[in-house]
Length: 255
Image (tube, rainbow, N blue to C red; front, side, top):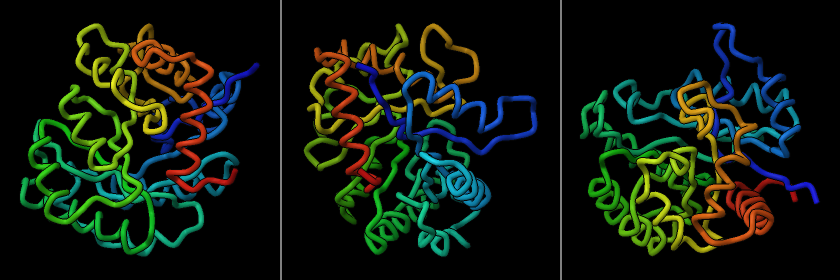
């Protein structure tokens, strides 16, 4: 049986730097069984480009949002894009206090505004949190978490996983789970229910072993999934079926 996968978080807005085209990336993905992709916006420009990519390619949907790195640039133009039929989520948004490219109070304001947008437009929410678990949980306690929330590129341990799951979130695991130095991520995956887990690449970043240090692409989802399935103690086929069903439900994709 051929397994089918959804890359629930990648960035298909391409630069002209000689990297593969979207057509090439999607063809390679399909050959690897990755039939659907969610391309994720980080600011107004990449959100608009993501919509255009989704409009032009079957099996691709888009998110619209402002990454915490870009929070200082504000949200102008973002909400107007949410009505596009290709858009399935708000984000990625959240906190990044590892780099703190935008002031943390601005990050909080922009994150809260996007949570409100997700609720108002009945869309999923895609969350980026780095070095900011206390701030992320505090904001959710203050304003509430949308019903369909994905903690993308989950990098916490079991304690953070339990708290996210208790709040109702889904955990999306990236190539980091394949890294030797990330045992806490595998421990978190071990306690994640099969119906609350998603798999992603975050391409072109965070390529899984054995491609670490090179550009990532949606075709590498099965490499992430193999390690994820092992960490969870489930068969790869069961993980493929579960993540397909869950991503379809979370993003309200066609059956």
